[in-house]
Structure formats: structure tokens, C-alpha cells
Image (cartoon, rainbow, N blue to C red):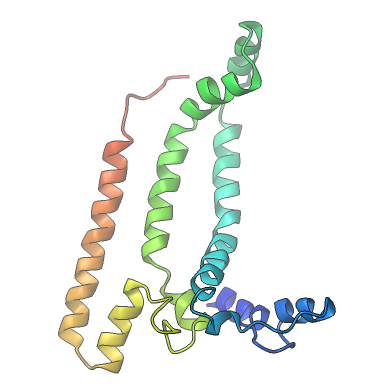
Length: 179
């Protein structure tokens, strides 16, 4: 929620918004970012990416730190180049980290409700351009008073998320590399 509130000020439609204020310095008229059907979804995706980058940097930094330096030294002695070391040494040893990252990314993609709720106009607008599944569940429950239908959608979302996580783990499964 906090990130949504911060970016609401960044995307403010007048020149008080950070982005439109910056455009005003260069003489460009303010752009109603969240009111434009063609831009709003990309603006929300940019916020979601900005929000998640730190987590993935830490995740992959920890994964890279767990790779023994001896393996890189052996690859260099065998004549491996930078690209070859990345694809044949680093990437296979980071496979478990990649697997975890894909699961977290998929779950986060299904859970973009808070950012959309705070940033979008008309809760998923303009014209439904930024609507996500969580927003539809909320709208059915609290705007249309269809609690049973919203509950069923929530249960379906739960099973879709669990199925995605299980399929991701199953597809990316392989034998463990012993170091």
C-alpha cells in the first residue's frame, strides 16, 4: 500500500506529480498517466517491477554467493569464456534460485490487488484497463454484494496460484547438483 501511495504522487495528473513536474521542466504538457487507457497498465507494471527488484537482487546475490569459486577457477583453466561460464556453470548452479524466483514471481503476479486498488482510477480503470483478478473479487464482494460469488472466485484464485506453483516446481525439477 505504501508504494502505491508514493507512486500516486509520482503519477499525479497535474504538475504537482513528480513525473509531470519533470516533463513540465522540459516544456511538455502534463500527461494524465493513470487516466490514459493505453498507459495505465504499463505504469502499474512499472511500479510492480520497481517494488520487486530489491527482493530479486538479494535472492540472486545470495545464490551467486553460494557458488564456490573453485568451480569458476576450474572453468577458466579449462578455457571457458565468459558466456560459456555463465551458461554452463553459473546458470545450472543457480537453477534452484531461479525456480524459487519463478514461483515468487507467479504468486506476485496473481496478487497485484493493493497497487491496482491504490493507483488506478475507479478501482481498475480507466475502462477496466488495469483490472486484475483480485480487483474483480473485491468488486463482486463489496460493490455488487455477491459474497458467495466473490468467495468462489477467491477459492479459484487460490487453486490457480497453487497449481501454478506446483507446475513451476514440477517443470523445473531435475536432479540436484552436489558441490
